[in-house]
Amino acid sequence: QVQLVESGGGLVQAGGSLRLSCAASRTIFSFRTMGWHRQAPGKQRELVAAITSGGSVNYVDSVKGRFTISRDYAKNTVDLQMDSLKPEDTAVYYCRITTTNGVDSWGKGTLVTVTS
Image 1 (cartoon, rainbow, N blue to C red):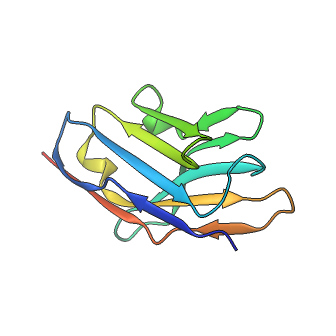
Image 2 (image 1 turned 180 degrees about the horizontal axis):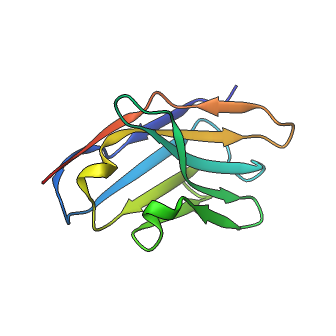
């Protein structure tokens, strides 16, 4: 099981930026997919952004053009740069990885609160 630790959440005003980081307990080189999900109060968890081992990325429509997912093999991290934040981005953000054999691991989450 891969251990994942998220960081970078916090309180920010609308229009501001935050950078989330997810540190893995071992090399991320062989992971099939790495991604960020979020869950707002009273809502289901949703995929925000994901990146595959081949470098393909996808984003939920609501964050396209504002969020950027990236990975750092040297640090074994996957980051989510969030710009032009909106109050509706408020949620707990979770890191998720899927290994090449299809096993999922999740972090415990980091809270992002965007005030208007």
